[in-house]
Length: 253
Image: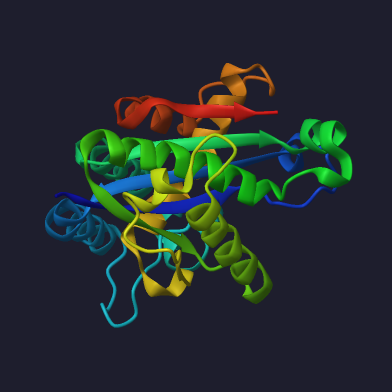
């Protein structure tokens, strides 16, 4: 039986504040699914090689790929201020994203529409997206008769406690659309794994890089935001188009 792991990261935040600002209104959750042997032998080593090639460093003090730091060219990413270096890095990153074997699921929630519709009964946006994400992930695992677990980036003591509780609730009680057995049959743990950014988890770094472009693609497809023109995020979206699970992109709200 094949084993998989779902690596999760978000674009946007879970709060219900400043919802007239499009940058605050939408929360997107992206999950990157990788088979464990592929991850061990190809995915993780290839990402580390890419980082060493462009940002040479001591493995004891690893470079962590973080989208905001890369865009702002902070820390180790100062080398990207050289346009030739930046172009070569972008090309190699696109090659990695195109060649590696993984699948993507993205869920986006319109927090403004959600809170206006449900008021005080509105779900926690992150946890709502997590439930939809797990329905898709476990649907995939049930379909291929595989098993897997889930890892997300640690977001703080309170957020982590709430996230563990939300995950356990799905495991124990299911969702509105799926019975508990649907999840329990394929998830190998009733606990979600949480790791800090500094843990240098390849799957979480790729999820971090893809969460924003995936969210923007969904918002553009639903005409929720103006077209920004030919930005690098669109190039990434075209590159990873074949990696998306059928019906994996979903707009909620």
